[in-house]
Length: 302
Ligand SMILES: NC(=O)c1ccc[n+]([C@@H]2O[C@H](COP(=O)([O-])OP(=O)(O)OC[C@H]3O[C@@H](n4cnc5c(N)ncnc54)[C@H](OP(=O)(O)O)[C@@H]3O)[C@@H](O)[C@H]2O)c1
Image 1 (cartoon, rainbow, N blue to C red):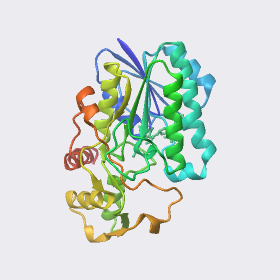
Image 2: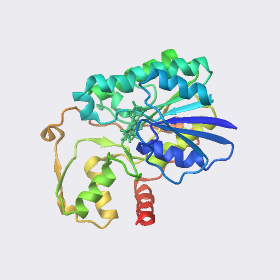
Image 3: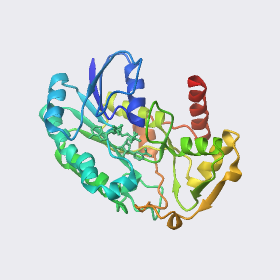
Image 4: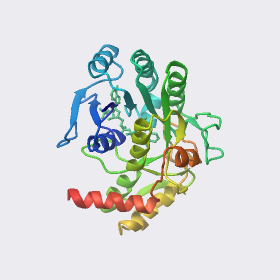
């Protein structure tokens, strides 16, 4: 029996990890979140409150359950919020990783951490694991520092970097590109979408699969995990509108500079996922297949 503890289980990735892991035999699952658990009806899972910036709470919960693996899905992920709230961003995305590394080393725990394409400057794209990071936002900088903390302080670690994650989850305050486009167009709301940023959008279930594989098979090191379709955000919006039969004339293009967001975004990211394909048995869905899965999930809840 392997005991796995997930942090940030109310988040998009955290929720999917809990759903997948709770259905697996030979896994004892401890799902933790900083606010009240938003997942209901999940069996075979112990839910606990845990703010990863609270070292005492963290040590207490981890020593209580002694997991062999921790998957850290907790983070401050709002890029503009991080630009304006640097202390809070640093506490969660960097400082807390010191606590997680320390306790993981003490108890010989495999620590799996999630990072981002925003550690790159986005000038070239199709990034591999050994390409040089050069973040252009505070979020990217903090996530890169978080990676460094894990790499220098942890004995047994995995960093899974990912790109523009989309999917459907329960009772979440944060949206994602697919849900935002779908909801806006359904409400006849015109939207401006950038045509000068390029990504390999990632279905959250695919990302969760890779994390679970790394956990169960004790894979260590850095992995790039994303979808396989390289698209502009505008193309993603149009494909979403087409798929759901929505009015794409409501979508206008805009340049990143005209959007005037607080934080800069890297223009071209996207990952080379060959290492994950060969070592994590990673086989992501195409973007259209991902939309089909999201649409089936909508059908189930309506
Ligand atoms: N989403 C993307 O497009 C994307 C792209 C690249 C990389 N990533 C990375 O993927 C990982 C998962 O992202 P996600 O999309 O699942 O993010 P998310 O939906 O924003 O979930 C993050 C979760 O972390 C929780 N959290 C924040 N501070 C915490 C704390 N102090 N203690 C415990 N939990 C805390 C949040 O709690 P509340 O629910 O209470 O706010 C939230 O539920 C992150 O490391 C992110 O950097 C995401």
